[in-house]
Image (tube, rainbow, N blue to C red; front, side, top):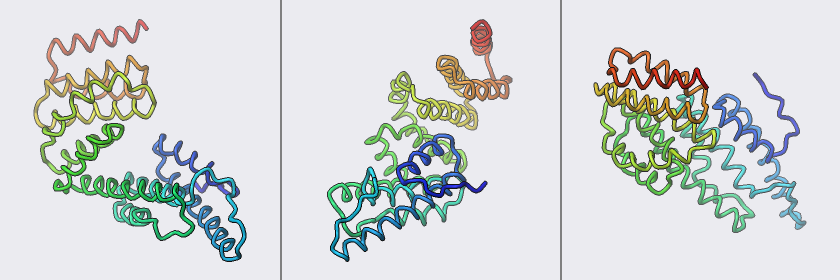
Length: 269
């Protein structure tokens, strides 16, 4: 569906992109990102004309540097393409925000944003490499996750999915971050972190099932089910129960009893 984005200001478009990302509306992001890029390009061109004429550059009410909007539009567009499996298109977007130093009229804030997007371009290129099964970049990506714990859950999702798609072990990575993920699970209160954590639990359960370790797979799944009940996440609860039923033939009597008690708790609640 074609969106009517006429007249919407850049900062509003940024907020729309954030909401669309949270709801995983990738096609919507592509439209909004293009509109943001077009809008900020018009403002940048007008700024250049003001400088050439020797008059004061207008801000047009922007809350951030022009660099920020150029980078944000291409970064979100690249992520949308990546999530749609369009990796060449995603890499093309990454190239557009990897080095924004060629823009003119840069101030201190602009240079900080340039460095921000330079770092993001490296990491997002690693993500595509990992999705494509290029295990040689794993150590570099894991190093990034060590330094950026807020990106740990989405990072582990990429690694787990890649390991199953390309048949390699991620045990050493899971072992390193197991305690940190478990400790931080108590702090997952935002919708973003709740969704990421439940997705992580589901993929982790599937990962162990693929390896033939059904006991651990079901234990992990039950952990996710307990979490879903605790935070009242209906989507996660439905997905967890469906996954449990698909694994029921591999469950122990103890696991079935815990599952039953959780179902009773939900019914009584």
